[in-house]
Length: 213
Ligand code: AP5
Image (cartoon, rainbow, N blue to C red):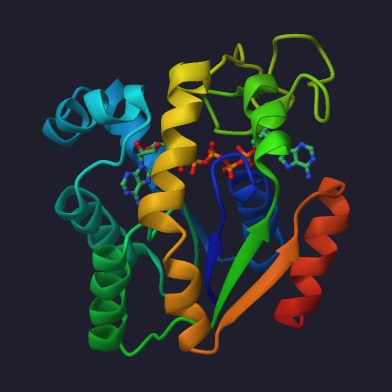
């Protein structure tokens, strides 16, 4: 399957994409994770991206498009779940061109709908494993042993951009640059809105139902 998991910061895209990828065997592509990995390896992409990400602003389209194109062309014969991409109209148009050339059109865009109040609650409680990427939350999804990843045993951490100022910038950026994609995909007839103010497992069930899995 070829899916975009769409929604504002903290809507649960990463949480759901990780589970969906295991359930349907499609490659999970998170541009946020790819950029964070580039930063930790101090590559040229990482060095360019860091300043934007720490403040909660978008990384320039051409940088993100390049890393996604390379990943899809090399690793995604069995489908993909895009998480955090596309985030602007030029990114969506670039994705359409690439998938057109590959003969692999998008099948569904799942829009995780959630209020700003709930987003702030989730992001300020979020922890993540730097080893395997497993997401946690102090309230809704704590690890079995405090501070330690259930999957790989690494020490789990808070992201730099989950501080209040960066959260504010991320929400404003979403409204200005990313929310217009809702109409873009509605116009293509592949948008499915899902109420994401629910238990993680309930949301997962709703997504699987929409996908007919
Ligand atoms: P990215 O890493 O993609 O961050 P984001 O889109 O802001 O999304 P988040 O990861 O914050 O939230 P999420 O929706 O994945 O929610 P999660 O499942 O983690 O991007 C980071 C930065 O990279 C961007 O700001 C930008 O600078 C750059 N970037 C990335 N892609 C880019 C692109 N395409 N173009 C340009 N720049 C780009 O859940 C959040 C928390 O809530 C967790 O603690 C989780 O456990 C909890 N939670 C999840 N679901 C539930 C639930 N149902 N109930 C209760 N708690 C829940």
